[in-house]
Length: 179
Image (cartoon, rainbow, N blue to C red; front, side, top):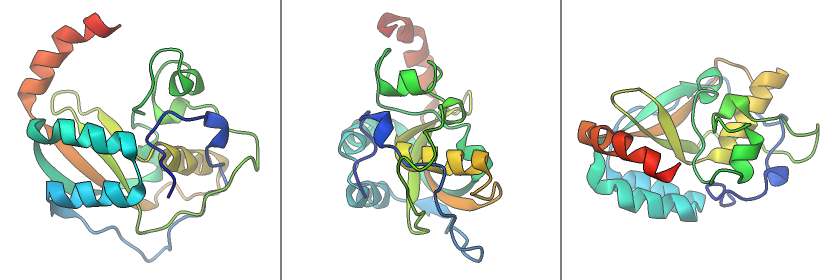
């Protein structure tokens, strides 16, 4: 899998022709270790995601594998760009998967592999989930969902880290410093 956690060029992203997982496959859910998340990220090739994951290790209270539907993928936030960067432009400044402009039909293609995972962290106060790895896969799923080629109730594996509550309490007041 290509490194899709870097901002990259949105024109190189998968199209809405992404294949859906087999109807009978159900993601494995339950607690996971940091090492399992790190190994999954390593195998996916997410260079920037690996650096971010290492930085986040001490501020994540627990990791779990959970299932997410194609519809829910639209609510995820993309990581990896500054204002004016490719994800900002693609989503008109929201960084939300559902707001990404769809590519022209047939620009690129991706067949979903049921062994893949999306990796994200969640803010325990707001419930927002930020992708650490899987921007291109999440966009392909969403675009397929929007085009009707990817079933909205398809369940995929999401490795989710829950941030310690104090992270929100410290970082939110400081975030205007980076705007």
